[in-house]
Image (cartoon, rainbow, N blue to C red; front, top):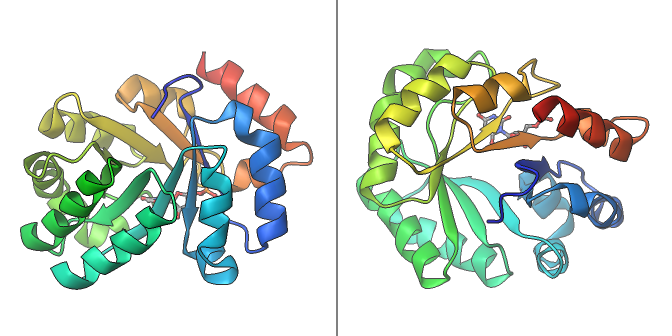
Length: 213
Ligand code: BMP
């Protein structure tokens, strides 16, 4: 993934027309566009095909099943053009390896969830975050997802993955600060609602970029 703006757009809308129009108008400010269940379930994989034709797409399917099912899910979305894929690691090494193998066959990038950004993630995920990050490194994932809402956890997770990429959600609507997440070691900031719901999304992104500089 290119590393110009260090911003990834979370395109959490449910209309294909709105998604494509937002993606086209905001594409110049983002290094990648993250597409997840809300858009794929409402619009199908065609929206991944379309947006992949002009942007890097990260498929945020947080893949978390047995190895065979994981492989089928990965194959479907990577064949539609996604250049990156997000998977969970709590399912264990064989399941994550199935994702890593499929992602490798497509020349794409695998990002592994460690600790999530919402408060509930403290309950089960936080105690396991370092093990999940280590497993990401063991399967040679391109990077991990770590929470901008808890920058100190980004630094800790960095200690388990070396120079792999950290992509970090939780900025804006969830209260995290892009500057603090970058200072803690994040490579990219993932941002959704605060851009999508802004009166002027392009102006909002320009403001965010100047805070990040
Ligand atoms: P928002 O900026 O609107 O809060 O969006 C954040 C995006 O990142 C959403 O697509 C969400 O599913 C995703 N995400 C997250 O918020 N926290 C995580 O720990 C992992 C995520 O993928």
